[in-house]
Image (cartoon, rainbow over all chains, first blue to last red; front, side, top):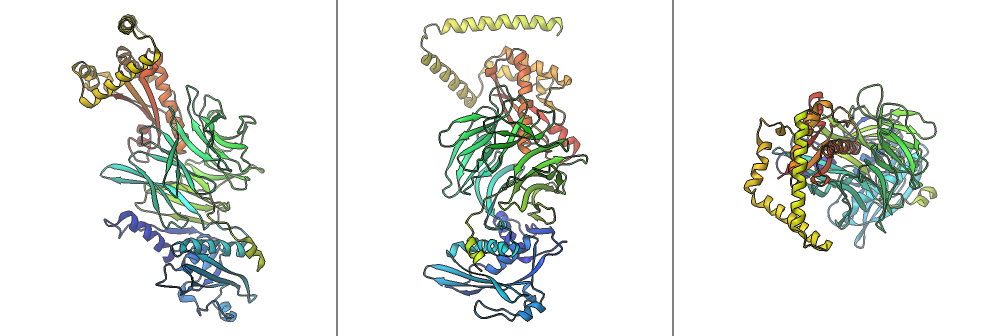
Length: 448
Length: 182
């Protein structure tokens, strides 16, 4: 099922303008395409929010919400032409006309001035039962209206599906530009819908492996700017950064522990080959976790903070193992396929995403259930890389290739919903999905 | 190893020993380690300044063989099989040539850059590139090159020789480059 959506396209157009301005931009449209969705996507009507604040409407809040709901693959927002009326926040909507328009749910709202801030009020109605299921008022800074719209999207999504949303999040990724035969690498942080992309680091040498701190305020990454690998931790708010490892050999694959106090990484100290180490960020002390002559790399934390999954070729080909941070309790986790690497543990610790090669040629994203052991191949490409779970565990974003260019793809963990982010000249790779930026007011979700 | 090589090896060993003795004689007055470190630093600085200023005549001569397309030393790339990091027999002689050259010139430094093709995961490929560079380093050391002369770095799949997605490009990208630091 292929759908174009002008809301989404508008978002990526801004990214595009920022990328290529002012040189070329007419034919290189970046966008989010839902390449496959749930057949039973629920029709939902999102009425444009009335703007009752100073100045012009800064953002189309309703459009942002509609685009988010559509991207989830679980909702099908009515186009604005299909809306039979434009009710405001006050009064009872005429539910019969919304039933006739075949909307299951109706969302209305307004943006109001409140001192030097804005106040976004919205209501969600169940059209069939003819009652309000959620009503809320969210204060927001004028320059943070998009973020507030993502927060509202998370609330609506959770109220309607029972599952937490992951709209109020960010993506970090690496973008490679080729100009006059030379490459330039950028580390980019954007909103989860691709909006507001910001280059937080650029270099003519490779940048790799961005990893979020659990508070979403720092990124660890690998940079070759000094003609060797080096791990940096950068504060997003200030741009300040610190080199945390620049040993001889490999300094790679950083991963923050769930408490944010430690950084697992790969170092190749001496002759032994790459091994997993853990750096205590407060004391600066390194602890060696694995000790083998094989390649041990790509550590990923389990949510308990006591164990790590990692890739090792100690058995002759790359497979995924787990080990305690004290170096004990080594276990092999994957047995299907002849190449399993780059593990990522789901936020609930019950699933493992990875790059997998089985009987068929090509490398695809696969998910393994930790208890039942079964492995499900989710990717459709043949050179997929770098899986990263959304903080709600519902989607996995990963890198793939299309016409020689790097693109980002996302797939729901049940494989039913697929999206592609970016196309054409964007050449993006190594996506990392951030934790949720603000807590959701769960009391409000229950209270209605 | 053939007979000629054995003789060359012995000759070089003798020469190196003589050089080491000469060096010791020159630095006899230096008693404390700090001063020795200082001398090392100054030597390093001199080497660096030589890099910036251009090469001295004798150094220029050192690199002539490297720049001669007919010299076996002009071959400075070793290729590997997919997901493997042992140096294939067809490249052993190439590595030995470089080992001899480096062993005779203890001031010369090389950087071994390990690379992989684009397939598989990026950080695993960093590990693979590292193993490849280490395999070449071990061979050089085995043939008498000092550890201090060699630095390794792995770029994994980040710096392909041919940025394409086909068998020929992949084969060209699975490599270790011997980079003489001039």
